[in-house]
Amino acid sequence: MKKLFTSESVTEGHPDKLCDFISDSILDAYLEKDPFARVACETVAGKGEIFITGEISSNADVDIEYVVRNAIKSIGYFGEDIDIDWQKCKLSLNISRQSPDIALGVDKSLEDKNGENTNSEGAGDQGLMFGFACNETEELLPLPISLAHKLSKRLTEVRKQNILNYLGPDGKVQVTIEYENNNPKRVDTIVISTQHKDGVELEKLREDIKREVIYKIIPNELIDENTIIYVNPTGRFVIGGPLGDSGLTGRKIIVDTYGGYARHGGGAFSGKDPTKVDRSASYMARFLAKNIVANNLADKCEIQLSYAIGVAKPVSIYVNTFGTNKIPEENIADKIYEKFDLTPRGIINYLNLREPIYRSTTNYGHFGKENLPWEKFIEL
Image (cartoon, rainbow, N blue to C red; front, side, top):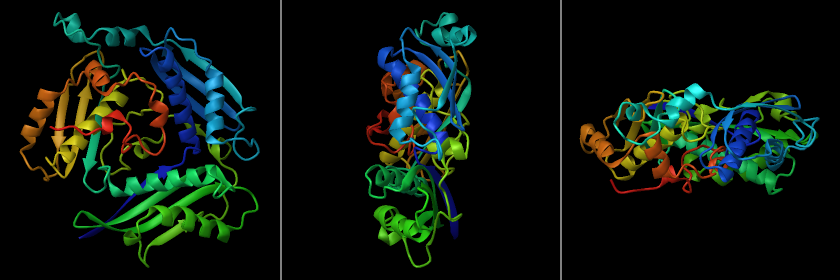
């Protein structure tokens, strides 16, 4: 049985990703000075303006304007006429401290209040988080999102390395994979839309993107004469970034995770410190799922964790191997319960999440990067 599945990625200059990167840059700036800072930072970008709002509780003194403008500069936005200018854009701040009602539950867990003496913080919010892994790729991600991220990252590389010096920061990629009996067989369709300087001939751009991006990334054996390639199908993409479309932190949660191949609990990552289980528990769920597959306990695995605000221990843990498990799923769940402390503090300490590592997570997926602690392999 054949079927098609599509996943999307975007470049770091996409307006939503610009906002994610700004929020994570602010988070890292605080964690560099105060590892216990509480940060929930949102960014809005549009038409030459950046608006920062949220809650930050910290003893650190951070020049937020400096951080924001340098984040925009590092992406490569210099032109107010076609996207946004890092020096000239208007910047507005609306930052308050974390709500004392939320802090009440995070500072001391319900278990400790009930006399259990766990000495643990409570979850920073209620919610459900998913982690996923499968053996389709070396990084144990689904093939559609893996290739989409590699293509969008390559778009940025050829721009910043002046291989294609007429490209702009904004861009989107889509990859459709044909599956046969649930195994990836070939690339059916590739869609790339990339910002470019005015005056560039469309045919030149299309040939350059095929040569320097697509054929550099997609393995030859996955492309055939029936593979469809669309490059800038509208014909023109000069105005981009926040001038072309507004941006908002947390609006690319499917890009950030598994490209729609696996479920998502709904919580965004960027701009949130690790006491927010939207972020830390999603990372831990990915770590668990990846190591279940890496240890050959299953070919495919999805983990769900759920939490109640102010409560340290997860409300539930769910393991789904889609019938690919090599040992009973109950035994896999038992291994998780026995080996790992899944309280917020336990996750933070195990994955060392108080370090300023979050700018490196923002773009091209939060999963599949070998340098990140939730991607490490262990023996189960």
